[in-house]
Length: 165
Picture 1 (cartoon, rainbow, N blue to C red):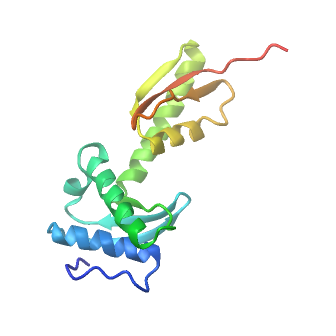
Picture 2: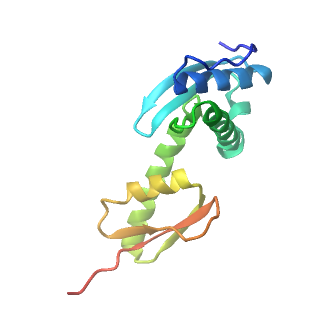
């Protein structure tokens, strides 16, 4: 439940503190939420459950990204060695990840059949990692990210070069 009291993190685990940070932030913004702590392969996730999810998710999950960034910045001040906390709302990220993996598998098939590379829409580092992992076991294609420090990059899915030995 949302509370607007003083943020106390002493004596809490880093995940409990992250939950308290997020709950306090959302309470000050006027949201009524329930926040569940979920353990996932990628690490802890704070799952926000609310009837006002569209306002927390934002366009393409941008507000979720912003909330996640702020929670982790504040958390690092109190728990410098804490692991990165993911913030999700009504399972939005999980659904988006499933859609992305399905899309990537379809694109890989298209590249296998056509023999022509395909350049994806710009993705952040987390989603690029998902793409690379989804294609790691596909022998006929490979995924390549461009270099540079840009936050969003376009992965190219292309036929894998065969070595003629």
